[in-house]
Amino acid sequence: MQRVLSGRYELIEIVGTGGMAIVYRALDQKTGREVAVKLLRPEFERDEEFVRRFSHEAKAAAQVAHENIVNMLDVGFDGVPYIVMEFVRGQTLKDLIRSVGSIPPRQAVAMALRILAALDHAHRNNIVHRDIKPQNILVDENGMIKVADFGIARLTTSATMTATGDGSFFGSVHYISPEQARGEKADEKSDLYSVGVVLYEMLTGQVPFDSESAVSIAIKHIGETPRSIRELKPELPRALEQILQKALSKDPADRYQSASEMAADLKRSLTNPRGGFVRNPVMDAQRRKARVRNALAGLLLAAVLGAMVLIIVKTGVFDHYFYGVTVPSVVNVSEEDALRSLSAFHLVGEATQEYSDTVEKGLVISQEPAAESEAMQGDTVRIVVSLGSQWVAMPKVTGQSEEAALAALNALELTNVSVERVPSDYTPGLVLEQEPEAGEWVSKMGECVIRVSSMSSVVPDLRGYTLEAARAALEGTMLSLGEITEGYDASLPDGVVIDQSLEAKTSVFEETTIDLVLNGERPERYSALVSFSVPLADMEVSIVVTAPSGEESEKFRQVCSGQVQISLSSAESGEHRVQIYMDGKLMRDDFYDFQ
Image 1 (tube, helix red, strand yellow):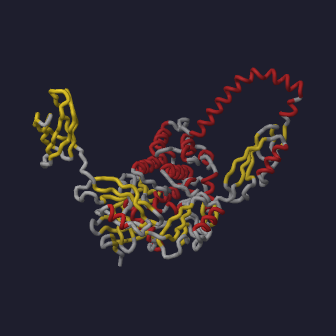
Image 2 (tube, helix red, strand yellow):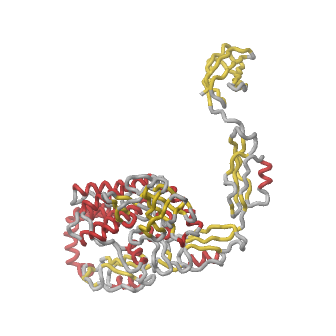
Image 3 (cartoon, helix red, strand yellow):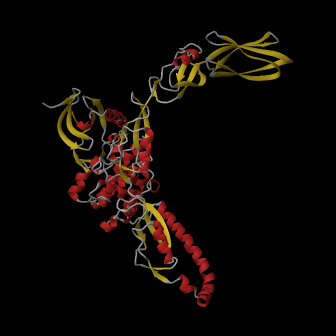
């Protein structure tokens, strides 16, 4: 017997599987429509936090409707949360690439433009996909592109960027951006990097980075430059090569800043395949500096050439400064020893640092120019010094005190640590849970979470309390009164609490202040402009206003002379009776419209 979810969705067959979920072809018995149903894998069904986020993110993604996005039709729960989507007949882009090897440039650009159109719509609605890959892009029977897994991607971000104990990755490591590989937050520009990887694969039939180890692939995303697509396939347009160089920049600031910006360059590549129009901040800055240097060199060359010749000939400076040397090897030695060795050959060492899984911290990874090459005294040799491995095994910190756990993580240079306090009967300050789990690989820049036992107080609902009653209700808790302000609520009596800064029934784990808003006078939001003349000097003027409800109040009393214009206010709108008294005598009795 087929399984039916919520008495409506009949699961027929499995059509796709992923690291987090299984996708079924199903029949909507209510409409007779063929749909796709995504279920969490059984191993995640009892993870309450995972289930909660799954449902929340699925509902958020349901708000995104676009012709190039797989429409989300329903979310529900029947022993396990599920998502119902439109069923797309066709194949994944990954299957298409496998079957044809590579896709012709014009067709690949057309597909990329549809992917970017979907992302542009999502990004404008503040939704980041975070898991763009060919497996999540469907090509229907008519060639229409549909991007799938909005919502799931947001949920699985931490798994996408986190390595397991055996070194494998939960997520799509071939397509993640450098910032995701470092465990940092992904944004719209991370999606555009992934689009660049997908376009690279469509054009060449291979991904930019590959290795037997998922960790190695992630490290390549962070530190290595991919081979040019024209190096792999010289017949590809230069414009697409330049577009991919920008899209795959390591620094998000150097990439396309929006999907529409990248789409504009791709469209232009169809009519201008030779390129030259792609704006690349890094290359532009280098060209500007080169032009300035060349201009200055031209101006100075003629002025100093004669003097240099005389000095060189007479003093032997040529022998001292322009003597050729063989560059020594400084790889796998300490930075200090490398700089000292280069200095002995009258070479200038310039050091940068990067992470390495193969070279010990503090030793030189590489040098440029290479050892045994020829250089002139005074030339610069650039060396790259290892910061050690970027990836470390997460230590076991559960059962330790908060201070000891933080010290252990800091010793491994894991400094992006969040501390969450949870109510518990255990001794306050004891680490109860940790993320990632002990033994899992984590980037030194990745986020770690420890959950620490803490005393707590439940925030009471103080609405309707007098200030004295509210103060009494907070006695013996971790809450104290903060700022007291006034507001207005016609449904409650004067002087009682109408709002509070902390949500009722939530928990606090440390001494916290709570701000209260007390019911005050009704605000006067409507007004009318009244003008009149005072016949005698220094007459006492009083203005009495009667509102439509019959409420009468004196709005003005002052000694006046000559022409007077005043704005009167009221809590009610509409026709008000305005009576003007001068020295106690009624001088005017009119009606004004308060707006």
